[in-house]
Length: 101
Image (tube, helix red, strand yellow):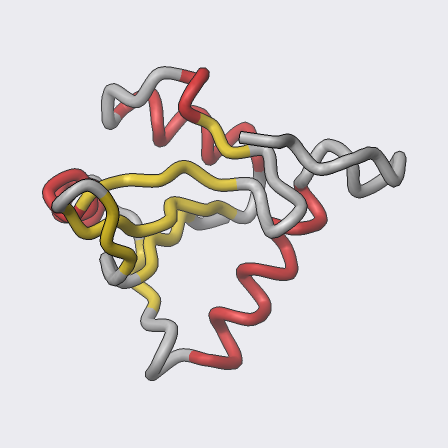
């Protein structure tokens, strides 16, 4: 089991953001808690279950043992991680609507 963090490439509100994902949801939530991220920040999205973290928090996640993945250099691995995150979306099994936020 592993926790992954992609490159902090998404710009929003003057900062760069990355996605924190994991092989298992329980593992993802536990790791996010270790980072001090509240559960309400969880992104239960059709595009993949994840937490958004800024570049400073990304560095802390790496220090705590998250595995870095590059959307440019690890494309095959990244596709597999994203596919797994999509399966973790709460609406995946039920065919529910995507969360609006």
